[in-house]
Image 1 (cartoon, rainbow, N blue to C red):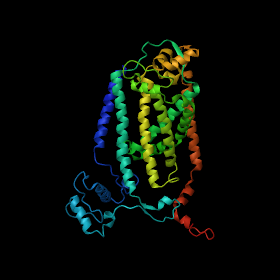
Image 2 (cartoon, rainbow, N blue to C red):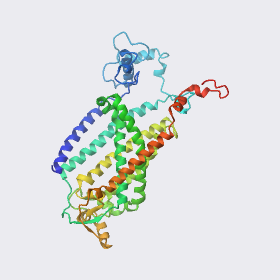
Image 3 (cartoon, rainbow, N blue to C red):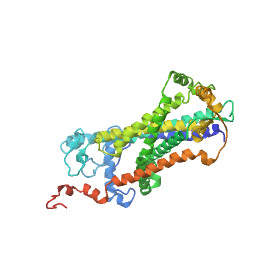
Length: 447
């Protein structure tokens, strides 16, 4: 199957997904309907009966008023028992509320942040109302979720279209049979450490962000709960090897990724992707430098916001947590789209590019075409080239295996660290029991 045909098929699939996402995003804002239970879909999910759940849904739908209702006004009042008469429209309902403003004061008053006193140990437990949470929920469930999906699917669609039109970028003069070492075994192992960690973080993060709406309906509540739990723990544990890989990348490659005037010429000429002439570049061209700095700065931002989420309310309150979560998800989605492009160029998009991180050696003609200035520097220093050899599979995957193994090992170590640091069952029960904090140590009253 040719690369263009693969691109055409992928463009059709991603195009359909993009249209479906656009249609879904054009609907009314998502509103979270409260539930009376914890076992979704089962008999115990609604111990008060079907009528109570319908009441909750109807009252929740009233958040859309005015102008956002998807159908007739709910046949229930905002307060008190269900209405016995015919359904009234939103305007009449608002007039009814206003006529009895004392009874409906909690609806008519502007939402205020309210904090009281709680016997629970965490200060945030005393927050009774925080209206900004509804704004955050709208951003999280609609703008961020649909915007991120449109961006990631849209980038994938454009890449597929480019592949279908341009085809795979070949080595113009063909492979020479001589190879030049591009990356050391250490650099490749660290690259795979970072890559494996990021891919697992991306997969588990997408489950956390989209799983409830996309996976839970067909997988079922209980299996999805297990998947979500594993994803949440894996997301935290694989953050450590990812951060380590990013730090090593910054230490090893920063000097070679500093921008210079030459990079602007590379960008102006489309980096050889538009047209057939490759602009001159050093060991890292402008596109690779953009990827490097995006991963470096994005990795730092994800680390800072992720640390705030891993230790909730340790540094900040509700507003800070909501900002951190929004920034963390938005930056992660941006990086996912970027890495999709990076993976495309390094695999099917460009002939000979994958060998740089697979075996560490690239064909001399490939270097001459895509990194001419670096090739001239290597040649002027008399760096020896080697005959192209297939080598054993074990030798070629050694760096990949080392990076992946280190990532998994660090994640396992973090699981043990989290378990050692977390409270046991009895301590957790004590922290959740208000009476514990009223205990007199001398008389043991309250135990």
